Image (cartoon, rainbow, N blue to C red; front, side):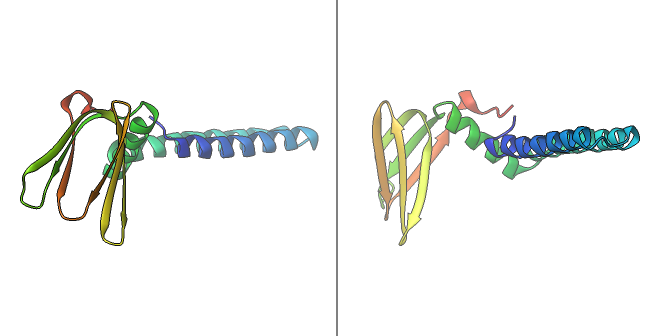
Length: 141
């Protein structure tokens, strides 16, 4: 449910919290301040986990980032890529489990993906490229 960025953020906060705990032990801080620090740390952890969970389940950009993470870590998503020429005639069709990388440079859209062990790069200057997710992987959860 969490992306790499979320885990990095958790790691940084966790390391800071460990640092605070070590500081309080070394400096022999009073017990009441240790308890207050512990309560604050627990509240921060709960807020971070809750915020990340809400972002990834309640916002469309969060759902897209989760889908991107799923695609990158599981070898892609089951998709169909259909390439059409300028007149709307189908030129090529690819179906398989792959991850798509898109970039736009000087008005040329470049779509790169690996399908069935072969690299495909499509430069869509005058045609249309449709990338559809197949039904089997529609669920994000």
